[in-house]
Amino acid sequence: MAYRPLTYSDYEQYVSVINEFRKTEFTAQQFNDVLDYVKKTGDIWIYVEEGKILATGTIFFERKLIFNTCTLAHIEDVCVISEKRGLGLGKKMVKYLFEQAKARGCYKVTLDCNDHNVGFYESCGLGKRGNQMCELISNL
Ligand SMILES: CC(C)(COP(=O)(O)OP(=O)(O)OC[C@H]1O[C@@H](n2cnc3c(N)ncnc32)[C@H](O)[C@@H]1OP(=O)(O)O)[C@@H](O)C(=O)NCCC(=O)NCCS
Image (cartoon, rainbow, N blue to C red; front, side):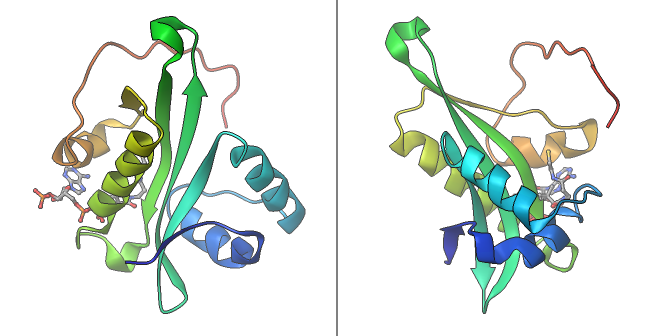
């Protein structure tokens, strides 16, 4: 298993991987800036085999004052490259992110997904709880 945090040198490969989730453009400088920002409160993890990124997932840690200063984890942008889907890599990435959350003492892990991916996250052990309230400030 070769999980590691994303680094500046992963720019070109990560652009390609994350575009298999959502079409997006960013320069190397923007990539570095966002990476620095994310690493203050979490990390972008990648699963690599023979130098190739096969899967990624992001985790953020939110410190709260309620519940006696608990920490809440947010999972974002889980993606497996198309040629490796259906082989269990997505589930392993989510489990790996759960381990990060447990190691940080988080009391809960939460994420948003579209209807299409509900079954995937259920197979990872997550369940629907509460309601997501949302107002789109702009359409990306
Ligand atoms: C969603 C995604 C990460 C799943 O990764 P994957 O490696 O193909 O999934 P896995 O092989 O680990 O599947 C794990 C389980 O989920 C199930 N599953 C996978 N995708 C599913 C889906 N869309 N709906 C229902 N079940 C699904 C599998 O059948 C498997 O079930 P099992 O454990 O009972 O055998 C991958 O399809 C992907 O990268 N999609 C594009 C990006 C994306 O939409 N990411 C989600 C962001 S919210």
